[in-house]
Length: 258
Ligand SMILES: Nc1ncnc2c1ncn2[C@@H]1O[C@H](COP(=O)(O)OP(=O)(O)O)[C@@H](O)[C@H]1O
Ligand SMILES: [Mg+2]
Image (cartoon, rainbow, N blue to C red; front, side, top):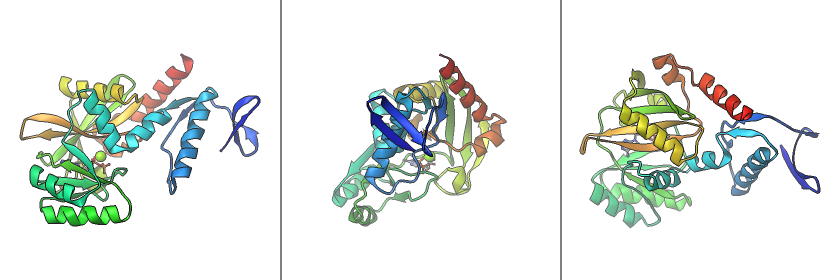
């Protein structure tokens, strides 16, 4: 996809021809290897929207949701409950946080499927893990481990509607991703879950989202772990019989008609 900025204004070209669309469902920004590539793709998506294409989720909210720390900052600002979370550049700080919080999760700032997250309670291990991450110029994202039952909650929101929610029961792991072997079970949407789901998409200006919520057994509250702008829904669909694709396409068509 080529982006042209000329005397006629902005234009998207694809395979040598002008490219126009009424609407687009942006899956994600693809595999990224350099900052320049990321910037170029983000700029292209913004131009696609500027030339009149309704894009959901918006390029901005996709970028926001990719960055787990920025997402939680936005949620906290909007009074959505989140676990204590930090981004550190000094391994000694990761050590101190592990001592303070007792048990922490060190996870990739950008990532999914539960891959690469580690649960640590030994401050020395926290030090070693963070030092290795910093040695490859990656940020260290540390979160207090929330004591939860062997499950979490995935809330699916499209537009201003919570279309469904599921429990994801782990198979012995502390991670409850379906990709890590968790099993989905339908959960009736409570008013509290509904309120959290709607607050999250509003705060992050998203058209649809899969939100990960844990039940904190220490203070009997819900905490939002992360927000997915391109959620997988195989487990959700099997457990609930609800196909999110129908809701998302309906929402996109409504936005195009506006
Ligand atoms: N701070 C935490 N406390 C308790 N469990 C956590 C925490 N962080 C992650 N998990 C578990 O690991 C899973 C994956 O973490 P998540 O933040 O959703 O990242 P991913 O993008 O890999 O899904 C969560 O669904 C949850 O079961
Ligand atoms: Mg997740």
